[in-house]
Length: 267
Image (tube, rainbow, N blue to C red; front, side, top):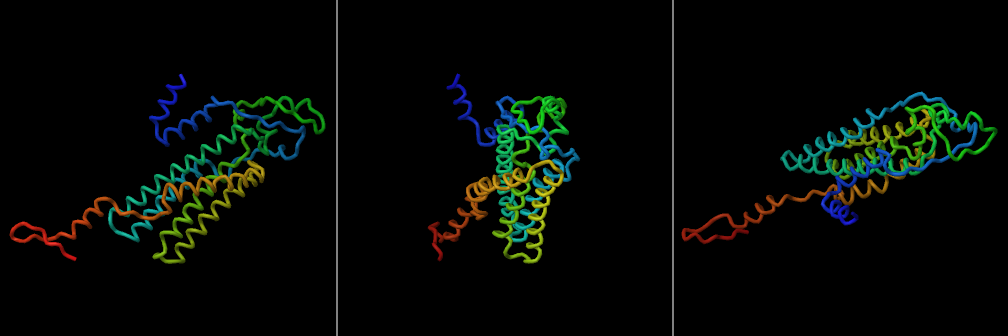
């Protein structure tokens, strides 16, 4: 059985593997953890008020803004089709890093099982009805079915991690590739990206959806994934000439023939 699993795994690519892990975590097939709570803990007693930045808005901005920026910048640098290919190639690697980030965050959420600030309001654990003072409850059962898999997923903040993933990626890309474009315009986009990421992070605390340490952890965890994405996958946004262009460049060294058909080299 183990050999069959190894064989199937060897025939998959990096996309398949990350997607498989993500689906396993989301389907609750892997065992998860559960952090307990102290009875009447004020840090877990906030009311649920919704999200200032919803998942739909987060996904729309973090997935659509980078390709728009990269396509515009590369078209300004080079009008040829190869500019579009570079932008799309880097965007593909960005999406993989994004998926890797999301998978890591969801794995940690599942393993840790930390209660959210609105834990008592949305989980309504039946153990909290009989506990006294600051008694610690190590195991509990939520009575609200809808929030059964959400009230204990506070650490770390996925919104923060993905927002900073997008913001820092775009800022660094513009720093590397947009040197020939108007400085004020580029600076404005960079400030907008980072301001949006910070706003998203702060909103998670203001909405009492995460504790401050959840938000900090989300921002920190995105750093190694960004380094991997930018340095190893995107090659630090350095363009490499396609093979067809290299071959054409070599062929220019021989551009004419004499009457006997012998090539004449030109310098």
